[in-house]
Length: 234
Figure 1 (cartoon, helix red, strand yellow):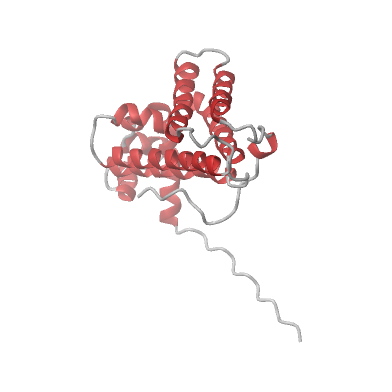
Figure 2 (cartoon, helix red, strand yellow):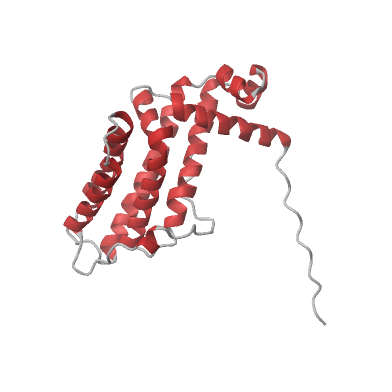
């Protein structure tokens, strides 16, 4: 006797309050990308969402909580676009290359729209508080993921045993910062290409003779499905 298939229950729609809050955060994130986290206000977000100030305030309770929600949303989108797809690539240099390639894709779009991590660092570098804490935690989580990929590259024999993983990570992060400065602020043509060459040069100095070459297939690997996350920003 064959088992009778039990029809799957349809996914529940998010409560209206959650849907409204998601719409507000989406609008606030787009606004913050243009004018920075410091430029966010309950009034400005209310205006672009066509809501009342009291309606927006009811979902967050303060401007600070709105800013933190934007940081959390940015972090969630960053890991979906940059980190998760890279997990489909093999451990070691293929995964590190995929992470950087995904990072570059996102950075290329943010040259026009702005990066919350970079603008936020400028706005809150000397301003202790929950917003700065959320930014620091988010950026630190990503840096730890990059460092872990570099360490794995050493354990796989793709990078020399004496390679300084923290120096490699520092230089890779520096490329992204330099790219934003040159491409967004100075508007220097060819900046994206130079960043890619810089990444290849960093790896070439630390790679072993047996290191796998760059693979376009690995760098454009599809998103890996699963429950693994970088670390939740609280």
